[in-house]
Length: 478
Ligand SMILES: *Cc1c(COP(=O)(O)O)cnc(C)c1O
Image: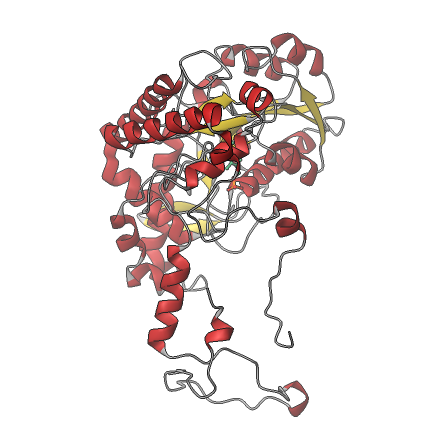
């Protein structure tokens, strides 16, 4: 398709600016542009068509099945958008007086109350703008705790080899050293390896449960106990809470702090880069170190106050506030019955689809899964030369977004499928048929799969080049 610059015709601009309502200010000459910016000039209808054409080339959850494991691409109810578009939320300024934004502070306080109840924590900050940012924040809490206790030698964070890649990265960013421990053959934490890894230099453990292979670690109580007895703290990566929301609480499993991704489990649209929100909850003993400002109530009036030993800020003001409005709308409209029901359906859907595929696809772990399952195409790759990537590409021809590929790293030729609770049985049945058809092709007509996708705007870009040398600006001279 044509780029917007290629559609541009001189004089066809449509810049309708409202009249200026503040005194005009004349910039000094040396700060003024000498040459006008080369913006595309295009009429409203052609611009509309341009973006519609672009939108049609992509695939969103509104287009079809989107089983992207670990990323929770669920349907996001429209009422969330209506609520966060209310002028009372969109037209406030973060520097307004607290008395004039009582409603917005109440949103933060209410979201904190409900989400700490769901996670089993005592307080929660909404500063972090994403999951990884939440991890970083939670780790700074752990750091602040150890430093306040004079434990400067606690410099190591234990991370299982099945962890999301952001975990070790966040630990390094927060100034820790990472100690990797292997998973046991069942995909869960190797208890002996954990026992060997903890010691007087342990600052804490980072863990996802259910883990990244979609399994609930049955030893979770013992795991957090081992870390606590060694003097470390336990961090729960709750980016994807879709299997346990309303069913089991990280706080009850023994975790001291947790982040959750509002842009996954709590139904804010994501993909394409945000905005997100990765609030961090913690137990009472860590609350005094929290960053930014926290809502407090004094005689019915809400104020924002800095915790007594706050380690600082991780973002301006209160993070991506409108994402919190969406999440609050979601939990309030789901209610106490709807939240656990969503988790149960997420687990049911994953197990239903897993069982439909089981005969044809090899499962990495033959166990009842939680909200997602991992298949391994190692044998298919070896026997027929068809890889997980090839199957993922072929799915595009059938209007299915590929599952997460090559993650977790401990599974070879991995495809990680998370249907989510919002898909119907019919959609899952159709998806299963497509998966089975592709497996049949892979075995009997592998070229069909190897040369796919056949019906997308582009077929197989050079992915390394696309990632390493992306073309991000229009070259006017060429
Ligand atoms: C998505 C995810 C993250 C990172 O969240 P971002 O918002 O992308 O930074 C961390 N851990 C797990 C388990 C995740 O699924």
